[in-house]
Length: 115
Image (cartoon, rainbow, N blue to C red; front, top):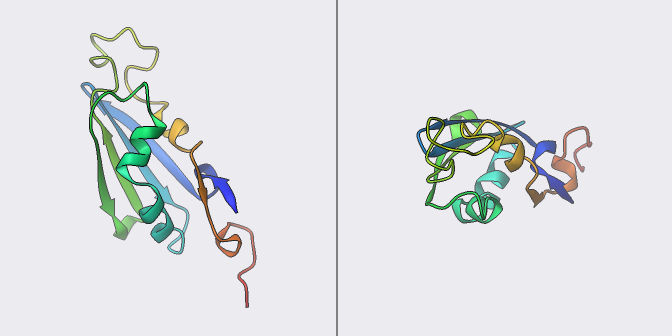
């Protein structure tokens, strides 16, 4: 089933200078390998096309069921110099949670596992 990331993960975001930082955390252990496979740095860069003008780096934190992304050159220079509405990157987590991925039905929260 195709779902938004918001149905299988939560996210937090912030900034450091002109780099947005977005952490994506799977709701449970079974979902993390799917996020690890599906949510690549390239896919995140494509998702933020027109916003992120630099490289996207991905860091894996399997013990936390999390992926962390650094989106370089995505804040118009950063909070102190940018004219952007969100120069601190606080809404980047919500934007990432709108991305859609394929998830097996039995892994969706609230769905019984197949026997």
